[in-house]
Amino acid sequence: MSSPHLQTYEQRAKKHGNPAARKLLETMERKKTNLSVSVDVTKKKDFLAIIDVVGPFVCLIKTHIDIIEDFDQTVIEHLQELSVKHDFLIFEDRKFADIGNTVALQYSSGVYKISSWAHLTNAHAVPGPSIITGLSSIGLPLGRGLILLSEMSSKGALTTGSYTEDAVRMARSRRDFVVGFIAQKRMDGIGAIEADDVTEEDFLVLAPGVGLDSKGDAMGQQYRTPREVVLESGCDVIIVGRGIYGKSDQLDVENVRKQAERYRQEGWSAYLERVSLSP
Amino acid sequence: MSSPHLQTYEQRAKKHGNPAARKLLETMERKKTNLSVSVDVTKKKDFLAIIDVVGPFVCLIKTHIDIIEDFDQTVIEHLQELSVKHDFLIFEDRKFADIGNTVALQYSSGVYKISSWAHLTNAHAVPGPSIITGLSSIGLPLGRGLILLSEMSSKGALTTGSYTEDAVRMARSRRDFVVGFIAQKRMDGIGAIEADDVTEEDFLVLAPGVGLDSKGDAMGQQYRTPREVVLESGCDVIIVGRGIYGKSDQLDVENVRKQAERYRQEGWSAYLERVSLSP
Picture 1 (spheres, rainbow over the protein chains, first blue to last red):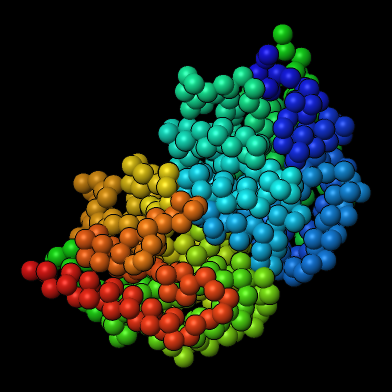
Picture 2: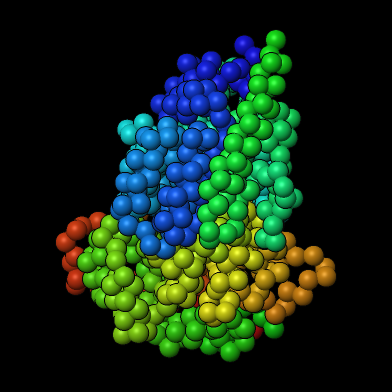
């Protein structure tokens, strides 16, 4: 069997054991999009307005729920309604990074109750396997999936060499719950030892730092194009933020829609070209 | 000049350039305590009740504000009142772990507005220097301090070798804002190159995973005694959680007070023994 990224999203959906990953792959195929929009705004009105505009073009909405100043429970209710209306999944980019007992509480409890509405969330590998144990104790019964950060795209990130290998090994040993990586390239077989059967592993690779019009920002974030990340590096989902909805407080609906469709097309044509390479 | 941990907290307070670190060291000396209690409960009533009982015995209260289910702004108001009443600082154990722009928003904005009330917070080094740039843009003007995680005490943590060295290097280049480490031992001079002047550096070392009666929990957390971490390993602040307030929903005030005083004494006598070794 060829490497996962040379198979279609549909083929991969049929074989995936995790319900959240399966649903994401099915959505990507159905809507012909591998675009995720990262909605990093601080007002609930802007947050929901952007999602309503980009919704038709995305498979996944990435949130930082903890930056919304005027957050209340209606934000979650509206987000879930939009998820149904536009047929996308929700990914809370929480970057959990604590020990098992603590992340279990942060995931399930508090004001946000992330596990109750986010199909996917993510975590750093740095605390060791207990972080997966803690999060899976909450998320697995709910059919959720976890993304590990095996790489970061910021300058001077410490996710290199043995760090990345250890992160992938942690994921491999919990494939029931860990469904992919935040990374800039495929992680297939990384850190595997001879005893590991890696032929059946299919980790989704979600790539942040995607942009068509800019090379970086003042705080060390670096950008690559959809074609680079999907075709050349084999990533599955492109994550785009300000490149789509800009910096203005005034939402330019027509332009946001145009940008979302532009990124969707770029990402999807790179994917089509990629799977056409399959033997 | 002898290593920072062989000097008294008072001596170190006089020389420290960061206002939050200086205030913490002064408080430790004045109250004769290097104890921090980690208050990991999910109800605001329990949260505030525990802090009111342990307050007299601690220099620092460590919070996970995002696990409190019934959080509202009165929690912060009461926490700040208790901070004044009992003379302690507040350390939000947020473990920031994202790129600069995102952590700046998570620190300053959202429901919690952490920068407005937490004297100290912490961050992982994994995203690279941009995380310090982002957090310091908010925290420095407010006189806050940042703790970096250069080690974790959970099993299989990836904070080893070059990771720890890189974390300490990142801290060293931003000593105006990074005032210490979450670690299990001193970090003095780690990762330094010849050109670095490390004689004046004084990083506070805050050690989690401290317990007198247990060796670990089911999710991979491991415990050491106050004497081990303060005297043998040269740490400055001991962080104790359930070892002080137990697991019960019913707060046993007398016992909690007894345990807090027991840990305060253990930590302080280890410190006195340590500084008596000074040449």
